[in-house]
Image (cartoon, rainbow, N blue to C red):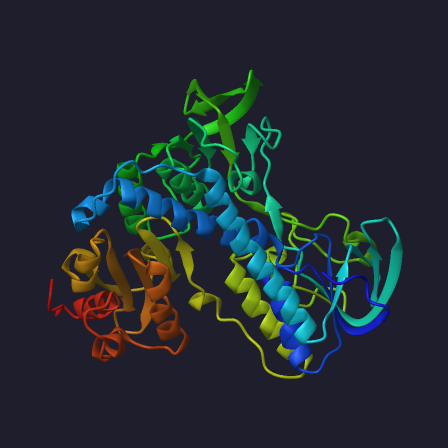
Amino acid sequence: MAENASDTSYDLIIIGSGPGGYVMAIRAAQLGMKVACVEKDPTLGGTCLNWGCIPSKTLLDSSEHFHLAKTRFAHHGIKVAGVELDLPTMMKRKDEVVSGLTKGVAFLFKKNKIASIRGTGEITAVGQVSVTAPDGSKSSLTTKNIVIATGSASVQIPGFAFDGKNIITSTEAIALPAVPKRLVIIGAGVIGLELGSVWRRLGSEVTVLEFLDRIAPAMDREMTSLLQRSLEKLGLKFQFTTAATSAKVTDNEVTIDFKQGDKTGQIKADVVLVAVGRRPFTTGLGLEKAGVKLSPRGFVEVDAHYQTNVPGIYAIGDVIGGLMLAHKAEDEGVALAELLAGHAGHVNYNAVPGVIYTDPELASVGKTEEELKAAGVQYKVGKFPFAANGRAKAMDSTEGLVKILADAATDRLLGMHILGPRASDIITEGAVAIEFGASAEDLARSVHAHPTLPEAIKEAAMAVAGRAIHA
């Protein structure tokens, strides 16, 4: 990252260089603004590139290759003897992927003449940002607009003080020096399921404690029930309606106390990963002094144009709540940059997909059945299993199905849910369809290449009208 810029006056200062911040900086620069981005960490990219999305997906892919070599290669006529885990090399590859991408962001900043300012940013007044550099020196910057894009941090729960070794966050969970024999994960959300999959494939005994009665509660219940079965086949163990109450570390072993209804119990582990969610990161930003209003849960409150209650101060991404996803933050950054430049800018939140990168993957866009029922919306359902899809068969990856929800009266697509191979890639078809107001019939009439995984989407869309061909 570049050193502090000698210039001190800008059209736009963004605090935070995660997906929302750095994408907005680039788009704003393209639109002719003089932009600075203030980042407290040594590298650009925020949590996503450095400690979240990218390193976790790299480990998911590496651990999947290891698992397949041990369990499924023989079915393909590939005989592999003596498969061994080289964890340091796997971690080195992960670090190389992260380094390449963060350096790529730095290159894009230089290309677009964005001032990359290292330090902790604090809003001291409207149009004023003070930056404290790593050496403690301070500089003062002025700007027409300030954007808070500081993201989020792991939630800590009472009784589980993070020590970075035995009681950890996702940041440490992507860099463990050895495979823990016993790993307990608190929380059956996206982070817990993905990192649980990684370490289970590599040899850990993984137990997930979840306060609710299901995994991934924001997603379609039928699909998460199917995913749970797949994860149980992998070897993950789940305890639901379970509240973890405290943890004690003795001789490198953690004893976790929990409550399940009226009963109490204990479970022991070598490592405990707390993955119960993320909270907005607003520490040290000077928001109270600047008069910026926060919600009761600590999120920065904004209007439809991402402006706070203080004119000239805006916020995007995890720090404003809603879907806490990197791609949602990116689109908000683009939309706000375009709004500040006098153009139209919007994000269709109903068309933002969510993904759990397990095996099989679970991807979703639009409404779930539970949401439609709660809203009293009449709908039709079409389903198609990957077991009947030629490409999935050829790949030896047939778990899961495509599920399409369409309005009963208009046939307009309301939701798409995919459990199966490369669901993260093919869910985009559903996002585009919802963005353009397509119907299930539109998807059914669209020609799909054969043999491909997206043919399952076409068949599910045909199934809405009861005319799937291959089911």
